[in-house]
Amino acid sequence: MVVASCVLGVLALVAAFMIAFDATALPDHFSQIERAGDRNWYRDFGGQHIPQIQDQDIFYSNIGSSVAAAKAADVVFLGPSFVSYAIDRQTLQVSDRLDRLKLYNMAFVGIRGGEFSRRVIARWNIRAPLWVINVDDQFAHFFSRDLNVTLGPQKVPLAAATRDRLRGYLTVIGRNLRWRIEDVVSAAHTGHFSDSGLYRSVSTGDMALDVNPSYVASNNKPMLSARDQACDTTAEIIAYARTFLKEIGGRVVFMLVPHSQSCVRQAEQLARALDVELIAPPFDGLTTVDGGGHLDRRGAEKFTSYLAAELVKTRAFKEAFPSGASGSGDRRSDQARTAQ
Image (tube, rainbow, N blue to C red; front, side):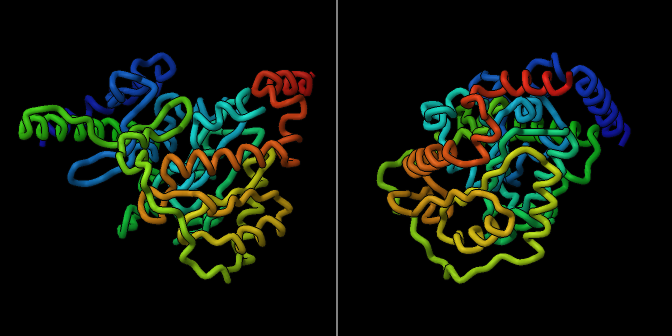
């Protein structure tokens, strides 16, 4: 008991130090498990016995530089894991007008509702000129107060949203230490070290999905709809969405990433009710990594190409970047002129 208390005390001191000096800390955050020695990537999804996700505490407790990267972005994408799989960075980087902007993917794996995103945005005052929000309604609509994490059949309350910042640091440190111990034990059993889990980029928010052979396979099945499209939005969803958009500020475009259970009709109704433009690509030519839940790399490239081409045509994009999408530099200049 005494030993446990001493360890907790040491971790608390370390966490307090990191909160005070996080801006100059190396690596990105204390105990970070880097990807191949690259501090821009941290292990986000891991656990050989109990799968867990790290980014919920990373963002809610503002650990490392991820929140700062999101705050510096010109365009921020919001949604669940559908968005993590659907946005292809290389395609964005060669897209006309978007290639000059800072684009951040702030999707959260396992979190269907947008309430967690709303709280992170409010807590750390993230103010993007343009938000691109995936308005999916599977299990829980993005525009709902749902605060649960869904991994496969398991649905549990989102604990990160109940922790103060110090407890968030301690949780991240403890999770990383546990994963490191699991790696060592696994290496002792197999005779070689295997880099497990999924990694997330600090600077872009992207997930490193290329470690999954199925994601990069060339023979994946086409994405097909398996849902009755007679699905409608509700007054409650519209009301929550209106409040959400008012709180986050900036310009907004809705999108809908196709998957087997996505419903375009409710997205169209929501967009009309709020006078927000919607980009909903067709299923044509899209391929899936898991039989209908998420896009694979080829599907993501096709989806992102469609999204990028349509996004720059929207009224919201043109209003957010009236000077030709030259990005955060112009945004700072505009803010300075406004202040004068």
